Length: 278
Image 1: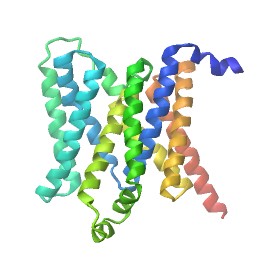
Image 2: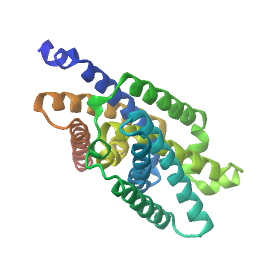
Image 3: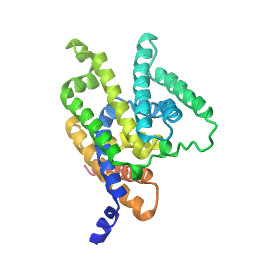
Image 4: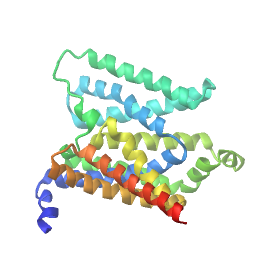
């Protein structure tokens, strides 16, 4: 029985993958609470796709250097998130319309840049589906440092972000810099998405951002408790998903997301059952 848990950890890539899953799970779960409460799921999905130009430029300039690709993707995500905020305010259009405009333009730019590469060996599979088992020690340090910054900023501005999230009118009345905190939240979301892409890829990033917080919302209505529960659920999904990936030879990112979804279904079903019997 003990061998079942220790056998995968005999490999250094599994150890690094497990640490990455834990770190990314906590970061995305905490930021994901704001995504769920503010209805920003579409924005999260769009930002994940708008990183393609950064990936393309990074590849053209630095080849397959993972570190360079990461920073180019992060830069593109930040530019995209701030552009969405600027367009929605300056053009006085709905935010979802601004998201659609930036999403389509950036993704098209990425496709155009990729199409200029004549080398048929360009492989975007890691970008699309992640490669958590290929995480290096440098990647872990980068994820840990960025995660620490994200969590520290959320703790530092917890009250302000909570007011802006639940009652923007009250935030304005209290003379809080609503625009600053909106941009801060967009930046935190962009960082979280770039970090998540390395583990589960663009195709599954939204799930790791939304599913644990959505599950936690069934269990508690207190914001700080929701963050803690979501982080715990993300950790469980990461560990179980990686072990499932090891023993059943399936993609690690998909295994993590499927585990998280299974937990959501169980909690949702339990919630409905408890309401019926109450």
